[in-house]
Amino acid sequence: MNRFKTKFLKYIKRLSIFTTLLVVFAVICNTLIIYNAEGKTFLQIENLPKNKVGLVLGASKYTNGNRINLYYKYRLEAAEKLYKAGKIEFILISGDNSRKEYDEPSDFKNDLIAKGIPTHKIFLDYAGFRTLDSMIRAKEIFGLTECTIISQKFHNERAIYLAKKNGINAIAYNAKNINGRYGIKTNLREYLAKTKAIIDVVFNVQPKFLVEKIDIL
Image 1 (tube, rainbow, N blue to C red):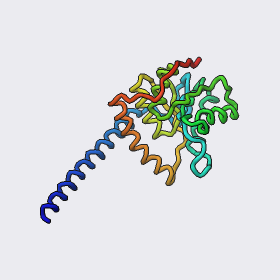
Image 2: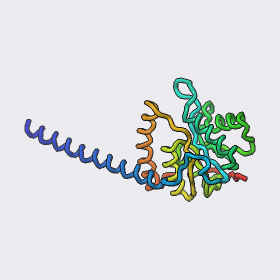
Image 3: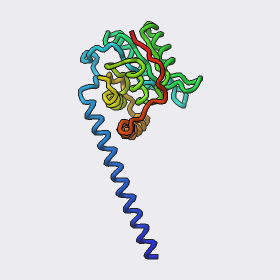
Image 4: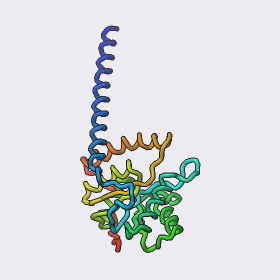
């Protein structure tokens, strides 16, 4: 019985040490990404430098409850605002179109056109399955070396880090964030996502698809 208790305590101790190391690693990763984005995200449109291309990071239009996803709504509004203020000339929308019935980029495009954005000013990346994919494809497929990322601040920070690691000089405009229970849940997931972003860079993870190049005029 004592032997079992000793082994159990050793197991608990090792598990505790391992868990502590994981938490410390996650804190370091998040701190690094947030620090890297310092001074590169903007909330006030008048302070935002101009860029040729605004890169909208995709989101589903509807929640599971079939309501408008506020992350989608606020990114859409931010993209419209930047274009009409002359802060960007073109809009590249990078999102998930992995299934025929699910098409984030086209949803954004249709709603932007309804808001008066010309069709020829909008480009779509249907294989932006993850932020990593979006940033690498922005460089390798669409030839971007600089851009203005459009998403919520927590997301923009990670995107700026991935952009820098893949040769893109990026700044970001912070779309309106979401508070309350849903916002807290998303921010907790983002904590893990920032950690994963560091790991992806270390192991040189590549997008699912890299095909022919598309020029944004």
